[in-house]
Amino acid sequence: MSTTSHPQRTPLAPERTRREFARRLDDIGWGVFALMTGVLWLLSYTVPSGTWLVCTGLLLLALNAVRYFSGLELNLLTVVLGVLALTGGLADLADVRLPILAIALVAFGVLLLIKPFAKRGG
Image 1 (tube, rainbow, N blue to C red):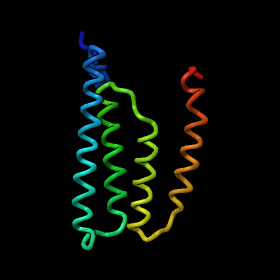
Image 2 (image 1 turned 60 degrees about the vertical axis):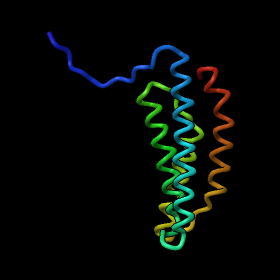
Image 3 (image 1 turned 30 degrees about the vertical axis):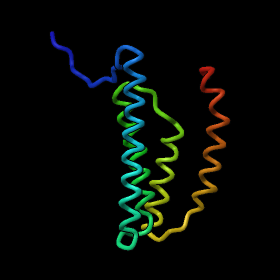
């Protein structure tokens, strides 16, 4: 009998390897962020406003996708910041003004309030 094969998240074995992979992933993310920011600054007169936010949001969400599919814990703060950056950048590209800083502060406050309950398991 064959069972259907569903892709599953499998944690990386041993814990030290997981921590090293997470650290390496963070280092790669910072490197891509610095490179992206520098290139966009160099091209600042040719790229539309909002491009940096869109790229930053996509980078943060992509890093969390890699974390998820590697069996690592997601970073909820960077997921929220990624969604906010992507939303703000897309709004800017569409010439819609959103109070992103105010929205970010509300989201940060909600995260701070939820975090103690999430750690207890409910």
